[in-house]
Picture (tube, rainbow, N blue to C red):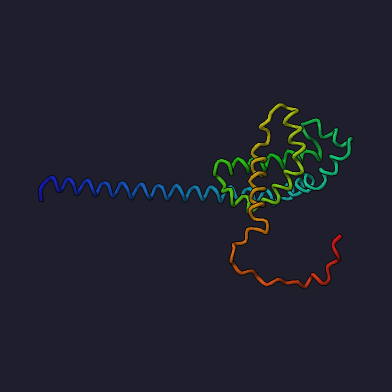
Length: 188
């Protein structure tokens, strides 16, 4: 075999080794990214399930809208920084702001986040929307909680696209257990 052929075979062999290394590196990067997403999703889930955050969400979603109807309570809210029970506003808004940033930057997949938490995100956004507008104007920062807003937009779009849930189309469902339907009090 001539020296030119040996050089050509060596070059092809080198190319194959380099290509295989590049493919392995890409697969490893993809695997690491999946690992980062799992960590971020776990952190979000743990925060959402913590007693402190659940209490903050309950306040924001169910108590705050009532208080916004009362002029005396509204006056307390209109002087940030929020204190006392109203600290829940910042707790909830800042958490969803972080989640939105993770989604926007691709650390957490948009579909996963919306499938997991769209109802909670939209419920909290709707409760905080008047406060977000007020705070943005008051402090002169129109981008305040914009990643939370982005998550609310994505979640609303997800709910519109999946009005009956995101159960896989064509997949069989479990049989309904309607045993409580006969004993449940009528809905008011």
